[in-house]
Amino acid sequence: MMKLTITNLGKQYRSDLWGLRNFSLEIKPGILGLLGPNGAGKSTFMRMLATITKPTDGKILWDDVDVVKSPDALRTVLGYLPQDFGVYPNLNAVEFLEYMAAIKGLDSASAKKRIDELLQIVNLKDAAKRPLGGYSGGMKQRVGIAQALLNDPQLLIVDEPTVGLDPEERVRFRNLLSDLSGERIVILSTHIVSDVEATATHIALINQGRLLCESAPEDLLKELEGKVWEWTVSSNDLPALKQKHIVSGTIRKSDGVQVRVVSASQPEVQAKSISPSLEDAYLYFIGGRQ
Image 1 (cartoon, helix red, strand yellow):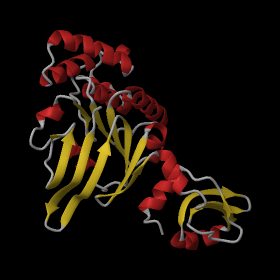
Image 2 (image 1 turned 180 degrees about the horizontal axis):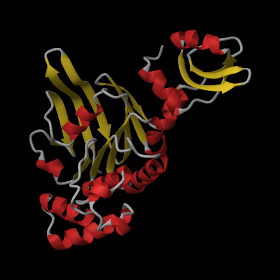
Image 3 (image 1 turned 90 degrees about the horizontal axis):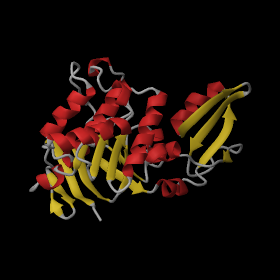
Image 4 (image 1 turned 30 degrees about the vertical axis):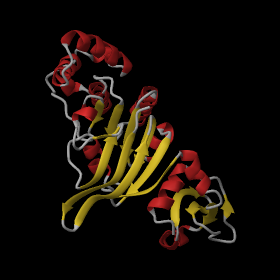
């Protein structure tokens, strides 16, 4: 079974600046949601996995082969959709994918067949001959996924894929990722909790270049049982409450503001315990488990 083993990975940019530090993780087939705020080190990590930048410290092993020493072992089975994926506006989808297939070394007969399949999978068959310059953000992302899948990769890396998509496109993109997982490793990097909630079989939380925790979503939720509370406060009390506690949600009501708070102990007498969500867990771990 394929596996990706990351040991004590680090990336140093300046003497006082590390983009990633002591990062260790073992990844098996399924969808790993790499979740963290902007600037947490997710893209740095993705670029090292995609063999674009080299780590300062540590090792990346693909099926026990050192990727830094032998990058081609991974490159042949890798699909990558970077955050700032750009297309050639004057080419249509077929032309663009033929160009990408040539770069990846696919022969033209198998590339043609594969492109046909992929346009079907990403639901762009009808728009295949239109110039990419006229595509919506979501359509461009789907072309991006198609190019990442040209070589039927065993490792698929997608970096912040739903940023800028409308809600409908976002749902379609998530469903597409879920359908693709099967017998491959998919790593989805995002700061949007609902993307991970909808797709991931495993979650790794990252902040300030460090891995905070890694587990199945249900284990993360178990850890928060009895730590999420709800009650109603007046609008005037809300700012002080936010200073004191992790507030994960507010709903304005006629008698005040219904607040949802993550806290290890009961924060107020009238607060009642409720079921945790992944958003609660995310804020709890990123907020430093006060």
